[in-house]
Length: 101
Image (cartoon, rainbow, N blue to C red; front, side, top):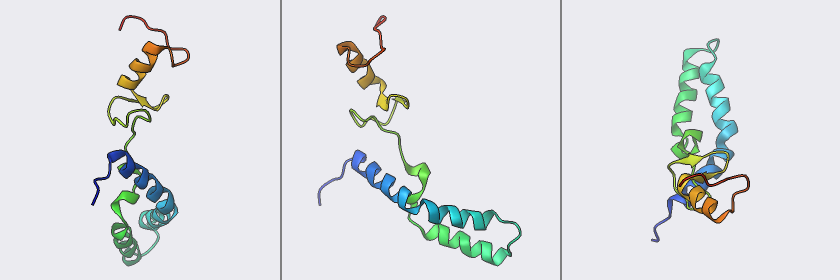
């Protein structure tokens, strides 16, 4: 079996999250509704726990679109500091001026 890269795993997680967002939100609404009986809320908790863990939005990791690096990620540019510096040196990022790198 071929080893799957972390970037591919993250893409799969994004798809799973998108597909299960409505189901998870509905179950969470039932769980948080204090007016419902405790048994019904507990059943909803068990159903939520039975769903795949990768379906949770918190499992998605922000990754650089250039290198796939998960750390030092700039959300606005969707890339890591290393990729930003490299592209900045070539003048490929509009509005970025090299100061003293």
